[in-house]
Length: 117
Image (cartoon, rainbow, N blue to C red; front, top):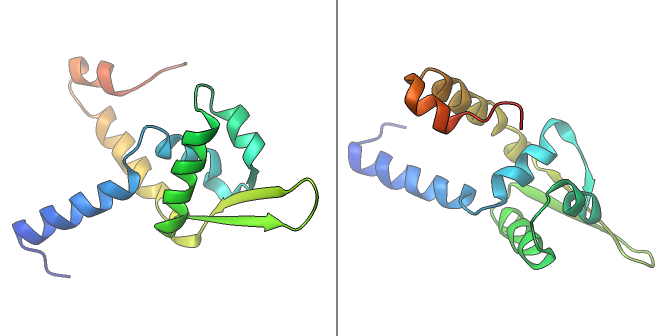
């Protein structure tokens, strides 16, 4: 597509709305690489997230076509999540942002890059 400054700005704002939310990027990184995670596994892997917030963020990602939710018909219910192909294709874009942040001047880089935590 040929973007103008206005259409590029609006499109990026729309894209960022898909990713905004305190836990969405953490969820994505838990699912990258084709990983399939049960809800309880995600809950354990993301300390500090409430069950309500995790459900909300996963549902938004699902509605936006980034995550697929699989409900297995059994008792107790087994619910698994994985990235759609489109969601998985986001990984190189996020990697590119990390590489970009690594090129920042030292003062900004220290605020951007988390090392060894």
